[in-house]
Image (tube, rainbow, N blue to C red):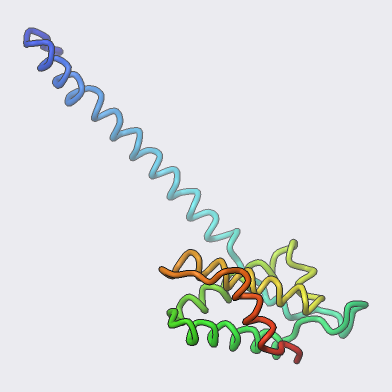
Length: 154
């Protein structure tokens, strides 16, 4: 029962505490439940990373497609960047995860068949991971210089 025989300020507090706040909490809990449900569905169906190195042609008009050795060189390069800049190696792992997810997607086909596109995707992945997970970031110019200092040709 609503008891509004108090001072106006107390009435407002009473209405908020006993009527509005519980409804807001209930709405938030319902949204959280729905959000968790969607996240679980995505985890089970949408976040599968396939072996993008399998079933590639032996060569393309752009040259050799990416293979395990080329990917390994990129991973080593990402780790070297982290070591030189005193970043966490976990950031390199995150960058490689970004790279793998992109390369395995339909939009990443060009990166699978063109090593220069793969290198560009790796550069973007490292830059993004550093920007998100490290306190200090590298400028795009420094990242480009680091890329030129290492040969990725396998």
